[in-house]
View 1 (tube, rainbow over the protein chains, first blue to last red):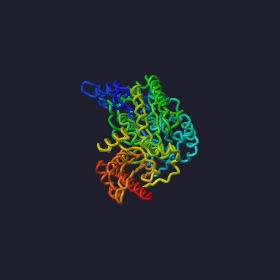
View 2: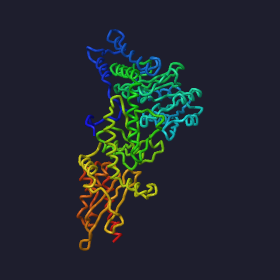
View 3: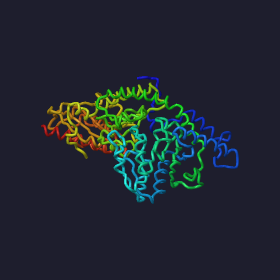
Length: 408
Length: 134
């Protein structure tokens, strides 16, 4: 194995990214007395004016990456808050119009949990099934629309699979029916181009820390034309045009701005590099017998690759791969013993769902990292299969579905 | 992760030196071999335990053990742990092994106790299978 790598290797960029050093510098310039530390809401002195200037510059960077007007960007504490603000904000504001919401079974919890909360408050929610590739089809959306549907909330890129939904097409349906369309785009920025000047999307959630910015900051795009109104969920000062109160976290906001400015500038370069790492990784890993890619290979981003290793249990695989940081479809490690709800929604059997690993690459992943990871996976899967009675049965030609298992 | 050092150590050793740690299989048709298989893939653990016995007086003694386990690190460590407990024991003695002994030896956290229960069940089944053949 290569020795040029530093262990453990980070292969979990879809979970969070390290802050880009250029972003870290910008953040630290906005903290101390000799820096730009002021409260952007202070109208009476230079400290406030300068902080406000930085915040507005950051807002422009974010708007610029996604093709909207800076006045359409509302700062939040992250994508989770942006999702909550969008979903509850629309539901609460427009409830006299209707109380039905459409979302999907493979959304992030930041969308699913607010929907569950609204159900408790008397709303009805339809959770769409994805197709077997993990995509939400137009037909599924059309079938679910009712007279009283007020909101459709569908994610852009799925965080576990990397699959990309067709926003143009779902958005068009929503427009025609006069339904608001919210998109969780936490995984999208810096990976795929987004142009809100043409996309029929009304609200879009963003996160800084998936794009080399800091944790604890995000944004919600709220369209001005045609105007979308939301009920604030946080009150106390009327910041962000009344949509989200609270003193703006200047240092985090400038961090997000800088991260998104860099993302705009370097997206092509990043994508090219990550695509080539992905292809190398996939070409090698696809030679392992009995592996299954989760999610439509033809409609996904190259920074995420989700693979199930049949006849190997997920938690033991994670343990064997302790030198690489990855996420598992098996939630055993978080003590809930439930396989990923996303993979189950695709119709994967429990054992395949729980033997899945999500590999995600990023700006700082090297070719050596990929080589080391590949060799460790090959070694570990071999060893675990040697240990697996199921693999032995598979090699003996026994169909595991016909075996009478002794569950207890 | 809620794993004790002992579980990690046993898991890694078993993974890296499968032969030394009795990973493998006997021909289940042999008269002096008893096979037990417990668990289910959908539950996340399947343990297959085989004992090879030799008659001694009016009983049998376990001379060798092989196992294969599909499951989490604790399940694999639990199966590996019982190997040492079994070799040299009479069938009567082996039947007396309780899951608590395995759980204590590996310092299993409460959420992983079922792994030791499964291991205990696999011993019983292997002995039953062996006795039926005699």
